[in-house]
Length: 137
Ligand SMILES: [Zn+2]
Image (cartoon, rainbow, N blue to C red; front, side, top):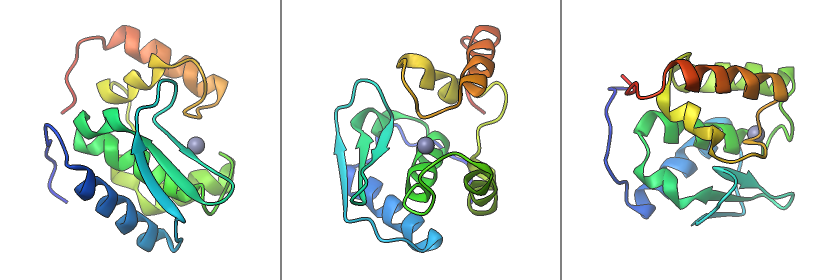
């Protein structure tokens, strides 16, 4: 997949991308919604409804893809255990945040989970300090 950034992605294209991830992972979301969220990038309800933060539409493509893959995987694995991590690595290796990724550091804008573990959050907080202002490549 060619790297690239789309300044603003239309909602329908965003939803189509989410459904593409769902097909890849082998799950069927009951509903995909995009709405304003203040504390999270996305959430997954127990009934299989995925909700994404509308602010993602203006985020770099790579970060959007990561959030989509992450959330879609929750329809399969409802936690962040080793199974979740290995599936994420298997399905979306190129989108897993790397050190110094400015967009992922942004995850810190809300206090509660993205749902990163405390250790991960601490690591990210370090990164955002070190790499403040660095643009994603
Ligand atoms: Zn999660």
